[in-house]
Image 1: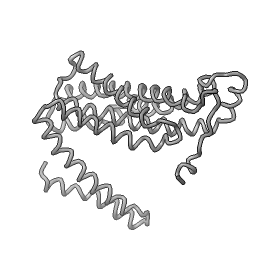
Image 2: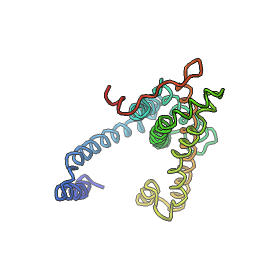
Image 3: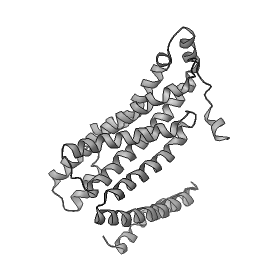
Image 4: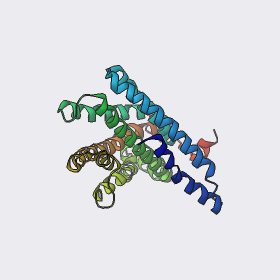
Length: 258
């Protein structure tokens, strides 16, 4: 695809802008901003990846992965601002997911140990973990805030912090993983995954494209459950002090005012 051909695709940006203007939705500025940012960011990443793929140096691969983890952490930490130490908890979770998935892939020679495979797969895993952590933190903080009286009652009756927060924790883990699991139930029937479609359009054998897509789906499933579970069990102790008393949870509007 040439840049001239790609520029014609901007028609798909003009359509929502025209609709927004006609219906007075007020989305024009955000649409233009999102479009410009996506163009600049993706082109920059494209040239960087081309350099990294050509060099095949392990340092550049590690730096790319670290950049992904830092960006994901900065984006997700806002949802868990009321949880003490949420930044390092997110970093630990993303690093663990990365080591786990790449360790299995490379350890069993499922994928080659090259930048061409490591970086794109790492991006998908870290990106998915970021979305899952945002979903989890959003639900978990809401559950804790809504059920604070119940939690304190269990504590007053001699329950441990883990027992007091167990229902909210499990509910939040389940809720955050449901989208990933449900989407996999209808994959291939309702939608064709973007990566598989891209491979097919690039001329790859459809069966090979399906096999690789299945690998990614299995990885995403692991990343989803591990992310929510690990982040949950790292986060809940921060809601209690050394006397096993529940700390006051600041409401979202209070956090936004600071």
